[in-house]
Every structure is written in structure tokens, then in C-alpha cells.
Image 1 (spheres, one colour):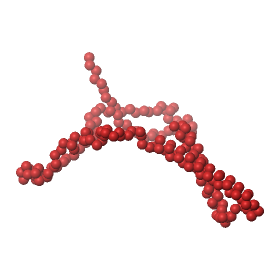
Image 2 (cartoon, helix red, strand yellow; image 1 turned 30 degrees about the horizontal axis):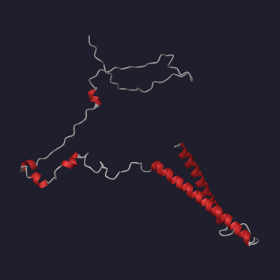
Image 3 (cartoon, rainbow, N blue to C red; image 1 turned 120 degrees about the vertical axis):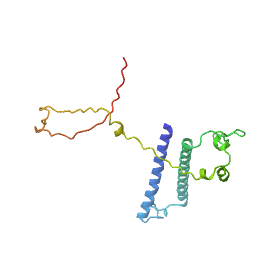
Image 4 (cartoon, rainbow, N blue to C red; image 1 turned 90 degrees about the vertical axis):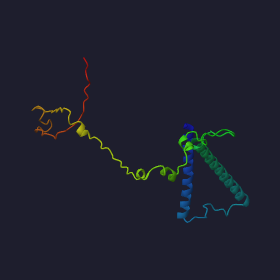
Length: 190
């Protein structure tokens, strides 16, 4: 896994630098209006030198393309290995359990439903029965704990603690904080 991540990182760096070089070169040529111009003057070179230069550039171009294709193939292989199908394959003649209705007995054994035949069994009075669904109201917690005993804890500061240590002024009373807890008392048997 580590090798794949390192390879991916190297591939992405190489590919991004290649793209940046291509974009920079195009941008430079567009800005300088040098779309087809070359910086080197080739008019002073002989035919043999031009052919050598052409062969040199052509081999460099072909090696770059081959290297790019190799990196792309390695990238595709890594992605196939990482996200591709697993090696579980069907063998000819092997039973495929997903094709058999083993796990859906309800659909396998049900009879076709015909509305007219099923309704003919019932009388007119039974057919016209209104069914109303009533939702049961949930019990509120407030009502269920109203009959429990209430314990009030009041925390008061002494006179010395009611003075602020920084500014030496008297502290004022804060708002009351009400907290409701239900304490379960375990029964003690003699």
C-alpha cells in the first residue's frame, strides 16, 4: 500500500509538472506572439546538422511519450488493483446463488392476488367498514415524575466568598439553575 501511494505521488508530481511545462510554453508563445517561431536560427545550419537535430528531438519526443504511456499504464493498473473487481469469478457449471430464489420465500410461494375474487367472500357490510387508526399519545415525563418527592439543594456562599477577589465588590445573585434528575432507590431487603 505504501509503495502504491509513493508511486502515485511520484506519478502525479511528474504528470503535473509535465502539464505545467506544456501550459507555460503555450502561454509564453501566445504572449510573445511566437506561435510557430523558434528561438534558434536554423538557416545557418547544414542539412546534416538539421537531420541530426531532427533525429535527436524525435528520439527525445518518442522517449517522453513512451515514459508518459508507461506512467499512465502503471496508474491504470494501480487503480484497477485498488478499486477494480476482485478475483471472485464464476466457473462454468457452478450454481449461482443470487439467481436462485432461496432467500425470498414470500415471493416464491405466494399466490397471485386477484381483487375481485377476494372481495366476493365478504358481505356488503364487511366491505364498507371504516377503519380508523388512533395514535396513542405518548406519556409526558412531566406527568410521570410529578408524584415523586422533590429535593431542593441551595448553595449559598459565605460573606467572605461573596466578595470578588479581583475588584473587591459584592457579588450579585445569579439566576437559579433547575435540574431534574430521577434517582432510583434500590430496595433493601432484611
